[in-house]
Image (cartoon, rainbow, N blue to C red; front, side, top):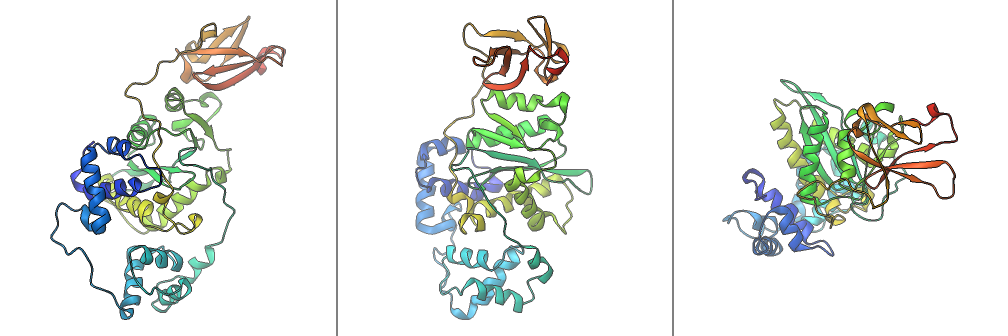
Length: 382
């Protein structure tokens, strides 16, 4: 897609940031962003020469800023804190360094400046405690998806849909949705996949769009993801730490964007989300990343989003059953219950070589169920 007029500079900024990452495939990025290679190299060259100013449509601004002196250091700290009220001393110090400021004091001194100016809430500071982190070793190995708690608008409600890369913490999608329906989520994911490619796996909680109970462990949305050859997993009920990075992201979103503000419409929310997502991905130092930005560790996936959904197909000779209404298949005189969303689709039944009488049921490449013919029939339901 071509640059959108209202957010052209933001999209160019995201493009050049990803294009400068180690191992970046600039030709593929140009395709993802809907621009020619010549235009991609043009913006990359301007950014290297002029910084973000070079991403404007031929601005007359001077290419360099006046040299700052030590006398304005506190003002620079205060201005950045005003722009990002939830950032502490370490983030502000790192961001000022990234912006090219000279003679930036230690993070503890920056924190002291914030305290002297009354810009730190002591009660909030006490809540910030370290926690154990773990992550996947490469981008796109796992994406975490969630709906952050909805909140009221002047008319209706906003349901924020978030999609975060486990390795880099890069936010691929932050969408202000009118509801939590599967089709709404699918449309948002399709846009993200077109831009960033397909991940290897996605994890989510047990919300209704993607599987909420025994009858709906697979939904039309997760079925679509499986057809795209994505592995789908769900967090354990009442264990939000499984979605830890997304939960952390949602908390940051609440503090820095939503809390204490009111919005007239979804369009107003989306505008605020877009501006914050840019800063979060490309500018905000992340403590879990050694104060690097998420963009410094993220690269789009080499797996492209297909123009057409792949057909459901299995190897020649596979044992195939078409799922009947309400999710039933028959095999060797047994009725096996599967999720209702599979009705009308073919599934493959595969015997386990080392375990006599035990079979796996697979949809596309995903094992969705197992059953044991040695057990009573009513113990083989999903």
